[in-house]
Structures are given as structure tokens and as C-alpha cells.
Amino acid sequence: SALAGRYAMVPQGRVRVSAPTVFGEVWLVPQLPAFLARWPEVEVDLTLIDRMVDLADEGYDLAIRIATPGSLSPGLVARALFDMSYRVVATPAYLAAHGEPQTPADLAAHGCIYLGYGPFQDRLEFECDGHAPAAARVRGRLTINNSKGILSAAEAGVGIGIVPDFTAAQALQAGQLQCLLPDWRLVGPYATRTVHAVYSPSRFLPQKVRVLIDHLVAAGAGRASG
Image (cartoon, rainbow, N blue to C red; front, side, top):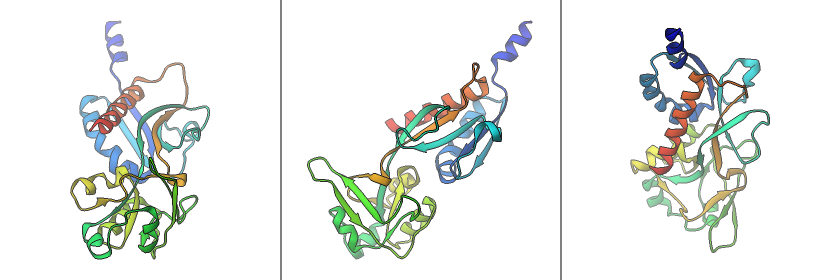
């Protein structure tokens, strides 16, 4: 019937989504009010968790994965949202007191706050057009396994923080933090990654999932151009 056809066209139902904790808090959650306003029949059940969930086994429709090329799980469909890179940041007051590093090697003289687990150890690798690649062994009295924590410590003047650009964006825009070594790109463990929305392949992707992915892709494209 026409009524059944109309209901089939309107995205509705609950979408279960998993995302990394800080990314979810800082970037994903702010995208949801506009989505919920546009699609009143859709509900979002968001779990912020830093382990990789099994979409099929745990009943998720969608997961956000931040991955380097080639490291996504095979067998999932991935839509890229945007590229994220790590930034080296400090407060203007910290730089006034301790000086601003001009080259990666200068970081060795500073206290740095970094993730400090897995591949994210105390060696930073950089590339810059027209320069030989450079590496710096950094040290600091504080490592934190969460980029919002690193951001808070950097904002408090504890030292130089190494954080994802989405975590630092607001503080950089407000002038609370400054971006250091702007011509140098972090590579190696801190290389640029792509944020993806991933889902299990099926012949018919439910509309409720499709419209959420489209919304996030558009928001990611807006971020890149903004």
C-alpha cells in the first residue's frame, strides 16, 4: 500500500554506533543534534569505547575507526570521513617561559606529554619538504593514555603536548594553545590517519544507517574545507 511505501522511505529505528572515547566526545557527539533534528524517527545508541568492537557479534550497525592505510579489518565496508593528524602544541605562557622549539631536535630540551603506550613511545619522527627527515627522543614526567588528558595538561602549562588535531582544534582556535613546528609533519607511529565509518556488508544497508553515514561524511567534508 502507499502508506507502507511511505514508511519504508522514512529512515526509522535505532542505530547502534561505537566510537573511540575522545573522538566521540570531541567530534562525533556535536554532529548528532543536527542529525536527530533532521531524522525524527531515528534513535542513536552511541557507545564510546577504546577497544575495537566486533560489529556482528556485539550487534553494532556502525563503528568509527581511526586507521592508517591498509590497517582496517578486511570484510568491513569503510567510508572515509576525514584525515586527522597529530599536532605538537603548547600554551603561549609555556613558550614565553621556555622558548619555542624551531626544529624537531629542540623538543629534547622540553618536557613533553604524550600517549606513552604501544607504538606511541618517546621517539617522534618528522618530515618537512626540503629537509632531511628528523627524529627526536622526547621525555617528560607525565604520560597519559588519553588525548583529552594530554590536552588538559598542556593547557595547564605542564609541557608540550602531542595530540590529535580534532582534540586540539578548539584550544588552537581560541588561542589557548599554539601549534609548534608548523612546517613539519609527524610520521611513523604518529603518522596521519583516516577516520572511517565502517559497517558489515549486506545487500541492503538500512536507511537509518545510510542517512547517519551520509550526515557524518558531509560533516567531515565540512571540517576539511573549514
